[in-house]
Length: 340
Image 1 (cartoon, one colour):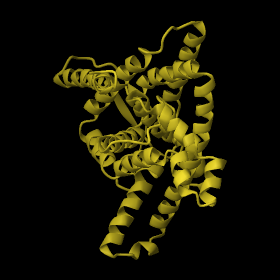
Image 2 (image 1 turned 135 degrees about the vertical axis):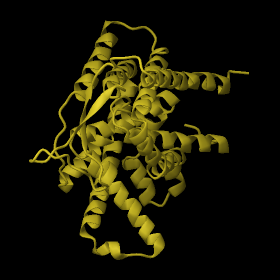
Image 3 (image 1 turned 180 degrees about the vertical axis):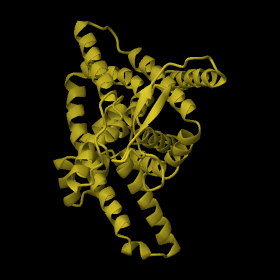
Image 4 (image 1 turned 30 degrees about the vertical axis):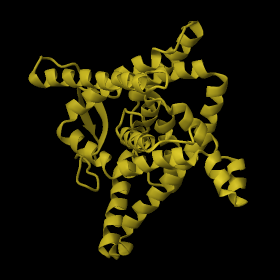
């Protein structure tokens, strides 16, 4: 942990939070993978692990400075600030690109994950049979998750809290996409589209001085869902971080082997060439969300049958994605204390 961060470090942390927040919203991409590849995954997990009984006692006893330092609050605060900004900026931009340039976005993410596998695996060290078995386990679980059938939407608040705990896994487990898990649980649109848009609209109404939304029961219900989902996410972050912190301390290489497997297995989720499968009502009509968009519940993957200009561009963006991640290694080497 670094208590003496420069202004540049703080800006980079906010940008990393932006990247984590945006990545966690895209099905198949993991915010935890951003942390892993960008080199601050362990600090992130250990900082979350500090949110415990000791931290609570420091806060209750009024020892706020000690509490702030103990939980590495500046680091966590800047990351979370970036994630919050992301939901109202970068995520909206990603939604636009996914709607209009879907093939190229998936291609870039596919390339970034390939680059991530290289980036993470290159410093692993010696692979023995045990670590290979953990790697294979991670791949099997990652691939298996990508082919599960999605459930139906469920807005019961207890289930929403559970979705928060499970969905936040993408922030702490590289390669395990929290948003894709929410698709499997049937609540992706409810929790990451409708409720977030309800919050966005509410904030906009408040700034306009318009409080008519308090009479809108559907808006209030969505805001309740968002609050419960956020509480579940917070509980999941703290719980998972303690578990992962324990694993990283006791079984670091085995944990990393499983993580590399997860990342490899997630390639099936972000495969660029795929057709959407939509949610249908009893009459066979495509269901629409609150914004009038078709509700996607899965994908049918295929190989391109011809080498068209779109295929060429998709391959180009795969290469760009790979180079983008690999360039992080060059950047970190140039800015490491041992360099120059």
